[in-house]
Image (cartoon, rainbow, N blue to C red; front, side, top):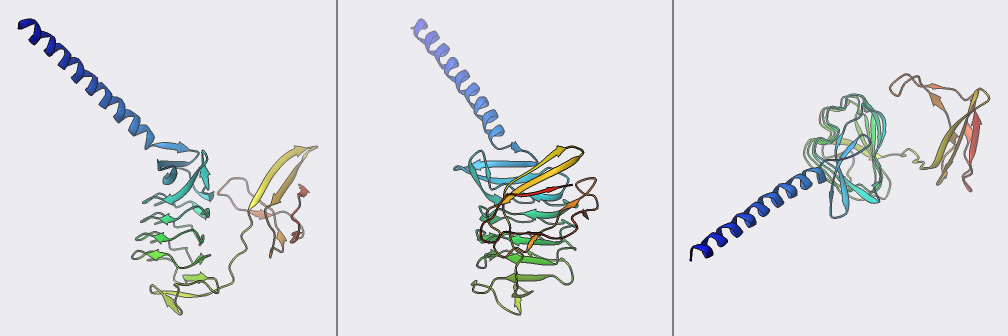
Length: 250
């Protein structure tokens, strides 16, 4: 009887120890899975989709990726860019469906934002307290909106939407001035390279489409957040029907 009890106790202890170690291993694994990093973006993965939870860069012109490791970026998380005073421009990819609360709040240098037609929901105060934000361009139908999404933005703030889109109202929408506008042409780069050669820099780029695009200007600056100066003498014409590789030397 004593041998049986001793054997049982030892087995139970081993099982308990295994369970504790497994739980610790699971906790460590789970923590790392929810704190992944890609460039300046912290993100989480759920069901094969990605939500950006934090931007860790300094700002300037920021392009949010449409995919990371082959998985679509479908959300911008709560306060992901909150307080990024250096953010001057942000490209939200057409994969994003949800922009959560305060995602771009207190982005004091942001002057305009384009909401792709994939977005179906924008959370409370998503762009609030961004005093330079004067335009919000919506490329699709009206998404569901939280409260005070554009609260305390520029005094001349306006919502712009495309003709034929549904869910918007004029002259105001959710209390913000709103009207049908001519939206800026969105050009997606297929590739871009800059190659030094013989004391110059050769720029080459191609786009996926150049319909309704008049052409290109090239700007340069000493730093990402520095003053940008146009360096081409005249507009580099677009190729509306058949986009081609553009070459220019500086």
